[in-house]
Length: 178
Image 1 (spheres, rainbow, N blue to C red):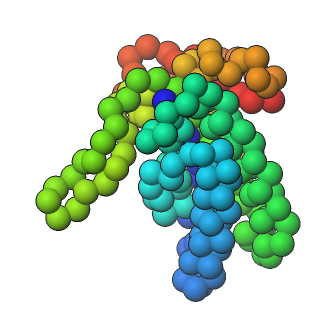
Image 2 (tube, rainbow, N blue to C red):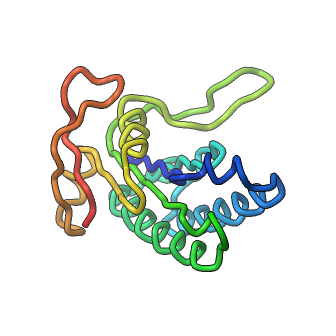
């Protein structure tokens, strides 16, 4: 399964000096656009986390090209974000999008309680995808080694210096889509 996390760079400072109505309008426009691009690749939106999105590729629908679908979605999301920024005014035009993708074994299912249950994925591959998103710069798509191994022929990809990420003892190999 491939896991994608995307998050707006510069959102907190933007939200602090913008009216709540404008923040909500911008977020809804952004989340709707990102959802369309994820769905276009048969991905599943797992959850929204304020200005962040978690998406799954390969569950509940199983397919062999989950990583390629996640990559196509990420590229389309970056393009769509640039289009949104082109018509946003003021400080919103300075926002950016960082994306992290990883592929690996995960546990998928309905998690929660009798009163609140969510279909989601958990596991090391999910955690690494989130960590990669957190270090991705504006406009950057970072891949973990699992995603890289499955997608290296699909796009030009550059290996970056290994990084220490939270929750890992060893340095992690990190790759950037060119």
